[in-house]
Image: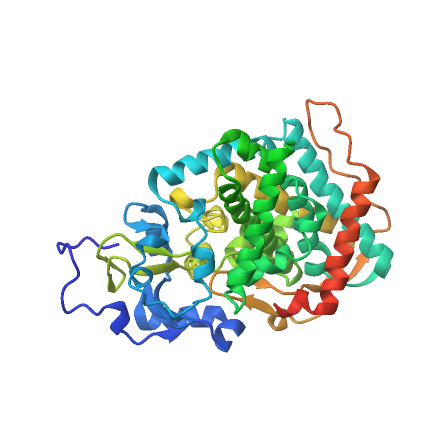
Length: 472
């Protein structure tokens, strides 16, 4: 960001609403978003005016400017009430992306209100993030066990060699199982949850209805756990802040479900894709047994949230080649910013590992994922990816990488399917050792596991018959 003596934008500086904007969500963007980012950079520089479903916003394209927006909370606000176009009634009627931004939860709070809720989340998540607590050890064990059960189900349904969709038959149900356990929710809540989160994030015509359904489900869960507390995140959030109403708690669970099922799920699929498509640096780190580095490199090449949620300018400020007016919406593009890091990493002047941990997969600045959430997300991703390559002796894409179907929405670029031809290892892998100072935590009963797998069958096969897995 450039220093400038003006407190307000000069009168001759073009305002966002006066500029011609290029619609972002086009067929070209679906096919090759990188080409769109590059063209916008050539025309506009680090910041470009674009249209999102009929609404002009600023898209921040270069790493330095993206990091400035993410880190400077005083200048770039998250609360949607700072958005001038919304306050002035200038948004199109029932603009589909507004439904998600209207949910009053931690992501869209500022200052002490945000910090207080963040402390509550950190305290509630810490027992699950810490491998030395019974909750943390059991969750780690459960993630590996669920992954193994899904591979076993695949073998039972399709044989030890065959074809599979690692999205619908592995990653999405795995994250649903983890959500069910972590949140302490009944299995019945899960079948349509992932699809409603997709509808909200992608801003489809039924985004508002999908958001309302998901919020209602999590509000019911909050009431259920208030009456029947347990060793789960929902109960621990209530323990950390007993003043939370069911509606407030439901909104926070909603946010956590978005990150757990969609953002974390995309990170799993994107990591698997980068390995299978032959990304050399990703495959080298996997071959070296560096799963954490494998995930970092995949997130750098293909971040799970391509364009991060809006920030709103607190005052007039020059960013890149434009003046941003107070109340303008800006969307920091992680996918575009990462191109700068990839260029830096490929330079002969620096080592190949210089920038891998600088990826924006978990955000940056005051609103990045809380430490406990990042650690927990990393655990889930590395376990999910590791168990695939523990079980599979071979796996190859059944479509060329450039023909895979993507969800290219305003926030997320995620795979709809990840089709592979696979062969399972002749010998089942030994479960990785989990260090714990506690005695072995007893696994849940067979009835619970059968119930989960029954729900997954409905999700995987019933949902596919409806077209839910590919048509959202």
